[in-house]
Length: 116
Length: 115
Image (cartoon, rainbow over the protein chains, first blue to last red):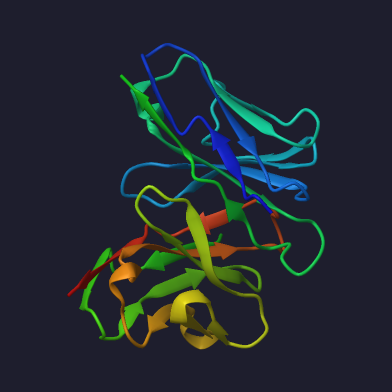
């Protein structure tokens, strides 16, 4: 078990540019989640996949945001035409669909985005 | 709708004294409740979880929490604080009876530990 990994750990971009983040979940976990955490706040749910299917999206996920999990393994989160309000920590988590810990999400270290 | 309220944004204790971090929840279903800890520049780590078994839940690093349905509370405690406990703590509710994708976090309580 190598844990959830995210890449990059930090990203600085200029307003209007597109950015893409990657998340690799724990290998046997079918569920994958994206959250956003702004300074001084708790993480807020963005979206969730079971295998390759995107099953739920938050209203926080505007049209500029798109998430994919094409083969049911790693996932990408793309933000188009970034705005300064997008500056945040983007967290990925995964959980299994069987066993004793199906209700437990394991988090990666996050990608910190700064939009100048 | 599900929600959590962490009653203190910042708690400061001396090393060796007890820790109490307070959390109240609201849930339409029988909730799953969690406490996560976030150390600076590190990912969220699960401390403990309640999923309708024993109401007193023991977690890692000497932390425990008690589920009190009548008070809709899930307070986190530790008998004796250690310097390494200084971090941000999040109370979290999930309602897997409904949505399976949504953890709802409180705003966090920053714990400071004085020598």
